[in-house]
Amino acid sequence: MISEHRYDRGELDPAQHRRALLALADHLGARLRTSDQIATGVTLSVRYADASSTRRSRTLPEPTQHTVLLARTAYTLYDSLGLQRARVRSIALRGDALRSDDRATRQLTLDSGDDRPLAIEAVADRALARFGHHLLYPAASP
Image 1: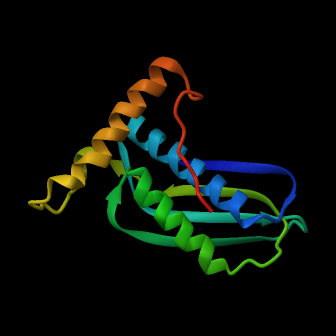
Image 2: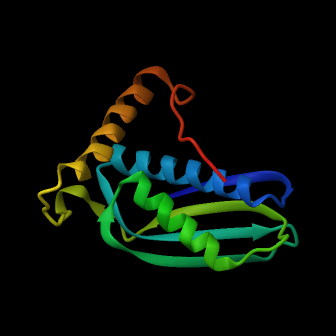
């Protein structure tokens, strides 16, 4: 399962790249939740203005469909590229080794705070399904 963002021209601004990564992670997480799947890894693909590309992959600490973990991993992969003044034409984020979410295992904790972001995502998914995708979107900061 893959989500991609394309720029009309080569984009130099890292803040714009990070904004796109957050939107891609949000979209990928929503698609995973909608299809009742989890990803065990993430692959980031960046295509540049000269038509070259770079790809980085990472296995997740635990299989997930949680947007925050997907975004955090995408940011880590992006930072590992060490881009300086690179003209980026497209960024793609792919969920790897997908499997059914009923096969997911989670470490149980006594901290109830872990479940709140997941509950918020479920509510946001229902609101998006009812009112459309322009109602809610993730906030980004550079």
